[in-house]
Image (cartoon, rainbow, N blue to C red):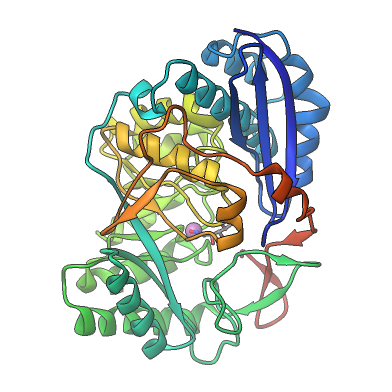
Length: 402
Ligand code: EZ4
Ligand code: CO
C-alpha cells in the first residue's frame, strides 16, 4: 500500500479544527487531528508546507519509521507545533492500518483491556450553589467522575466558568480576551467548594479540579493539603510545569493526587515528574504528544512508576482525537480517566462518529480504524475564524499564567 495524497480540511463548526486526510492507492484513507487551540494555522503550514510532501509514496503501515523520519529526520525537534503535526500524521496512519486490517485501532494496541473508558465531565457555575447544581446535573447524566470549577467571590471571571450560561469554551473568536486573577481570593475559596460538594453529593463521586497553572509550588502545597479531607481524584496543573523539580515541594506537603501535562508534547517534558513519582496522572493529549506511537511509549514508561493516563479531552481536541484517546484508553493497562467535554451538535454533525457514552463510560465502537468520518461538504460551510485562548492579569495588571 502507498500513500497517494495528504491534505488538510480546516473548518470552524462552532470552533476551529484542523483535520488531516491521508489517501492511499487502495482507496483506504485515514484521518488525523492537527488542532492546536489558538495556533491552528501554524500547524497547518508545518504540515502542508513541510511534512505532507514527504509522505507521498510511503507505505502507511510503517508508523514507526515514518514517526522517526518526521521527528529525528527534521533535526529541529519537539514543541507543540511540530508534535501536533507529527501526531496528526501518526493517528491518520493508525486509522488506515485499522481499516486495512478490518479491525478497530484498539485491537492493534493490545485489544480491549476494560469494558469501557471512564470519562469525567465538566461542571461549573458562577458561585457555589450553581456549581453544586451543575455537578448534580452531571450525575443525572450518568457521570461518576466530575471536574468542578466555580466562580470566586470578588473576582469577575474565573478559569473554567463560562460567560452567559453557555457551555464552557476555552477559546473566543477575535483577539484574546483578558481576565483578572487573585491567588489569595482563590486559595481562600477553593476548599469551601469541595467541602460543600462532599456535603451535598456524598463520598462516592470522583471529584476533580483544574488549577490551570495559577499557583507557585508552595501555594499549590497549601491547596492540596486543604483539599485532602475531600479526597479529590486529582488536582490538575497546580503550577506551570517547566520546572519539574518544583513538584517535589508540592509532594512533600500533600497526598492530593496530581495530574499534569495537557501542554506537554513529549515524554521528556514529564521525565523527572514520572521517574521521581511527583505526579499520579499524565495528561498529554494523543495529538499534541506526537500521536499514538509516541503516547504508547510514554504510557509504558509512566506505568513503571505507577503513573496512569488522564488524557486531555477538551472541545479543542476534535472528535478524531477523542476517538483515538478512547481506542488508546480501552487498550492500555495504566489508563486512569479520560476527559470528556461534549462537542456541540454542529461539531458532531461535521464529524460523524461511532463512539458512545453510557453510564459514565465511553466506548470507541467496533468499526475498523478509529470510527470517525468528516463531512467535507458541511465543513466547507464553516470556514476558519481566528480565535484565541484568554490572557490573565493579576490585580496589579501584570501578566500571569492562564
Ligand atoms: O484550557 O483545552 O482541562 N482542560 C483544560 C482546557 C484547556 C484548553 C486549552 O486549549 O485545561 O480548558
Ligand atoms: Co486543564
